[in-house]
Image (cartoon, one colour):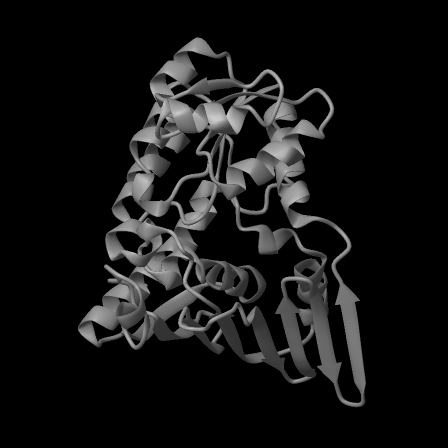
Amino acid sequence: MQIGIIGTGGFSETHCNLLEQMDDVRVSAVCGTSLAKAERFAQKWRGVAAYGDVNQMLDQEKLDAVYICVPPFAHGALEKAVIERNIPFFIEKPIALDDELPAELLARIEEKSLITSVGYHFRYTDATQRAIELLQGRTVGMALGTWMGDMPRVGWWRKQEGSGGQFLEQTTHMVDLLRYTLGEVTEVYAAYANRVMHQVEEDVTVADVGTVTLKLASGAVANISNTCILPISDQAGLQIYTDHGVLQIQSNQLVDRTKGETYTLQNQSNPYALENKAFIHAVRTGDTQYIRSTYQDAIQSQRIATAALRSAATGAPVTL
């Protein structure tokens, strides 16, 4: 299989390394915002062609699938070019800055019946899968999600028109994890503020603290809070409060605290490897059952993040 990569950042490198370890899979081309960036990226692997224009790459290379790993503001034309050529694609989250573009792209994807996968890797962790099993037979009352850390040191991230803000760009993982484990969200109320980072870094227009209250279709309630004012990364995870106790899903483990007992499960598998394996298997065979986040599903997580932004701006809850 011949794979193309769009984007030259850290996630492109992560996926490239994993793909290169698979049998009969080869990353054959990469496209960057400039030819120079693509060439620097391509030098890390043997036989990878470099391009500075996505249409040129797609026309000159015979690709079986494409990975799109670009910042939120860069979405749109790239996906349209890939969809136009009927190429299945894997895309990193978040899938856009708004709701309108994903809806437009989904219509094109469904028209072509394209295989897609979105990089919500928490769905592929051992901790998440075990949590779903343990939740059977338990009544969920509420959940608390967090993404607490520092501000990424890239210019586009600190601008609202570049990243969409922390809740959209980072904390979307917790939003998606909430949906995946507990079901759909029906209402969102958010409060955001700029407390520190606009005094520390130049041109900061994203909120640096925020808290979002969510109502779920099940009747449960949740809160997901984030900040990027800390000097170091602190914590990211989801705590689920049930009539049996507390389930805590973290990036590396699951902790289940019930009366008189604590059960801990450490992740053994690599979720990034599993999501790649699921996507490549689907492209190769047409069997999509192992893909845990399609583009169609990811739109629902996107809608929650953009609803939170609207709620924070207006001071009113948003019904989904």
